Every structure is written in structure tokens, then in C-alpha cells.
Image (cartoon, rainbow, N blue to C red; front, side):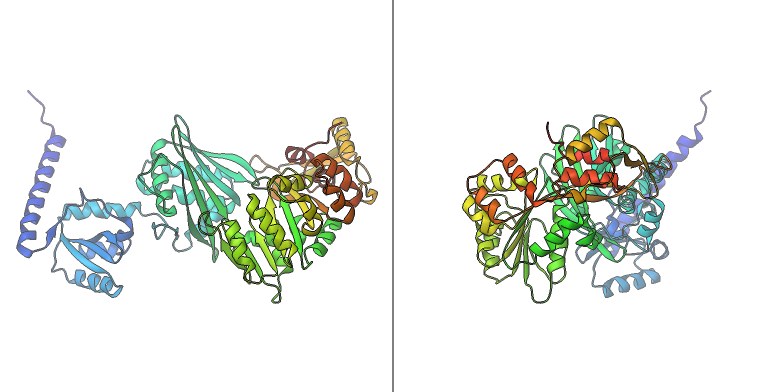
Length: 556
């Protein structure tokens, strides 16, 4: 005798009842002249869903399921529900134009299930990631290190609930803010997707996602950043903002196609970085005093060099803030404008109509005292910037070279006449960033023979002997107190600079090599980046290992 399958028969009956209910609603929709919809088939727009709180929606037997601008679609069980009228009046008072649809009780319940998937974000439209009711601050207080982030993501994914998965991006952003990460990287690999955070300049593995979770995050990031959801075979760039502690943090999104999916990098532009002052950059006092004199000159040019991410923009902003007064007109041309400085006119190059070159020519007609050009990239910009420095303006800009001495050969490569250097260029700087030792998690240790030899070689060419340390016998190293910390906290710059004088101006006319320039300017008595780094390793600001990662050791 065949056993009766109670569960299967109950499922069949439930399906039949649901089908009969949908048929009845279709008939009623024709009777009342209201369009029919089935939320089991039609997707529910979460931004529409948010407009009616779940409790009110259930009481009024209504749900907002689609939104386009001010046009809002409502699915309802009965047009005669008294509470429904109140909900509609409230929405119309907000300026919404309502379209009404009839739906079954079963269909509405399917829609109400989507309330469980609402994340903390109050909006999901391009450009703004708005998190409700202090939730971001709560998450930031909790997700202060990588183990805390991993535990929170694990708990969200273990149940495989979409309601939790939808919040993963919020966890990642909150943790990145709490740990002061500069970048968030999502990198698809063959079997999973790697999440990495750049902490104090160093990329650190944070989590490994399954492809399904990555797809949900990918769509969310694209939507927020204003990128095309259906494009997967070319690079895209976008941006969005996140309100944090009363300020707006801008996130610059870049994605490129890869072998296993699109790779995302989200760069975090934290406006608190503007709090870095001229004095807190970490510039050696003797160099700092000379720079302060040079940047207040009425004409000339300061060029700072270094690779991407070496803090050039932060330094230039600190210089601009130092010289800014109501009597000084400062105009910048940037690509992009990274931080907004009060009292300074900032313009953004678009690469097509308003380029660095055309923008610089336009800015000169604005009668500025000081001009900042984000980067000298080509001969046209280089020539115009030099002419500006020669005709009554002070110009700040950046170049991509390895050191300060390399500035002048690079300008020659860009077509600048070496004979103009003496009159146009005031300062050539170079910089790198190293991690700072945490004062609470460091220790002083004897230097090894190899370390002493390296430090002696680097410091052997210091002209100003007053800058040399009393001893090379000890250095500082990180001493982390647990497995979570590294012994480092924050970053500081290593700097070197060359100042124009009559002797150097004459020397540069013959277009000398980078090495010849470096030897010639030792007489000025300022430290090289390597020497600055060694002194910071001896006084406990950073470690020697950090310094040797970013600077070149002089050859024998």
C-alpha cells in the first residue's frame, strides 16, 4: 500500500488556493478598474519599500513596490481600507504621484518579506550612501580591527540570509573608517574573492568572499557609484559620499575587468586629512624653516615629487593653508579635487574641455597670487607653469620623479629651457611615506652590525654635522602587544629638498645628470630622504626596516 505524503498534498492544496486567490484578484481588478500585480513575480524596489514603515504597510494592507522619481507604485489588497487612505495622503503630501495596483494577500506577504532585507542604508541611489540613525557610528565603535570585521561578516553569511548579506558592504565601510584605511580592494580570484584594506599604506588581507556575496556587493557598489550595472568588459570610474560624524567622506570607485570578474578599488578621501598642518607633516626643523620662507615669496615655483600615494597632495594642501590669508588669491587646478579648502578657489580638470593646460591659461586671467596645478604631465603644462612663475605668480605642482635632483632632468624632458630654471624654480622637493611606530608598542634595541654599516653609509655625506645623532648603537622597532596590532599607527613623511641659488642656476644651464645635481647640492646642508629616514628610525618615529622599504641606499 502506497504511503500518503501529507506534506506534498498540503503543498498542492496551498498552491491551488494561492492560484484561486490570484484568479479572484484578477477578476476584482477588472471590476474596480485597478490594474493587477503579483509581487511573487514583480521585483520590489527597496527605495520604494522604505517609504512606508512595515507596521503601517501591514495595517493598511499596502506596499510600495516601485519608484521612479516622484512616481510611486502601490500594491494593495482593498482600496476601501481606511488606513490605506491615510497612507496615500501622507505620500501625496510628500509630492508623490501614485499608481495603484490590486494584489492578493499572498502576494503582499511575499512583498513584506523584503522588509527583512532592508539594510542600515537609508538610500541606494547613485552618489549617496546614507546610513540611518547612528548605525554607522555603532558599527565603527565595534569594528575597530580585522578580527572584529571577520567575525561580523561570518555571522552575517553563516545563515545565508539575504537580509544579512545586504549589510556586508556597510560592515566593510564602517571597519575601513574605524581603522582609517585609505583604500578598499575587492579582487576576484578563481574560487573566491579577496577583500583587502590598505592600512597605514600597506595592503592587508581582510576577508575571502564567495562569488554570490561578491555579486551582491558588486551591484550595490556600482549602483552607489553611478556605474553601469550591465557593463562588465571595460573599466569604469565613479564616486559616492558617506556622511560620517557630521562630515561627508567621498569614496572614489575604480573598477577594471579581470579574468574572474571585475576588480574594485574604493579610495577613501577622508576630510579629516585636512587637519594635517604645515608643522605636523614631519619635516625636519631646519628644512621646515627654509620652506616656510620660500613658499611666502611672491614669485617662483615649488615642485614636489614622488610616486602615487606618497602624500604629495597632502603636503601641497598644508602649504596652501599655511600661506592663505584674505589678501592672497589662491586658485587650484586639480584632477580630481580631493579635498575642499575653505577660502580657496578650486577647479577640476576634465581631461577634455578644461585640461591642466587650458585651465592654467584661464586661471592666469583670474589675477591669482598663487596657483596650484595638480600635476605637470606634458610640455604644454610645464611651459605654461614656468611662464606663470616668471610673470608674478607662485606656482605649486607635482612631478613623477624618484628624488628632488630628478626634477630638473624631468623638466628638460618636458621641453623646459634649463636657462629658465634659475628664475622660475624655487624649490624641488621629494617625499615618501613610512609607517609611524606606535609610542605604546615600540622598543629600543641594539643595532646590528649590518644596520650600523647601512646607517653609517647613508649618513656619511651629511654636510651639517649638527644634524647627526650622538650614537648609531640603537634603533627602535615595533613591539606589538597582541596578535591584532602591528606596532605601527599612522604614517609620517620622509623629505628632501633642493633650493635654487646662483651657483645651482648656473650649473643647471649645462643640463647635468641627476647624480651630478645631487652631489652639487650637498653643500646646501639639507638631509636626503634616506638620511631623514635614518634619523627618524634612531629617534623612534619609525623603524629602519620601514625606511629601507621606500628609499634607495647610496651605492659604494
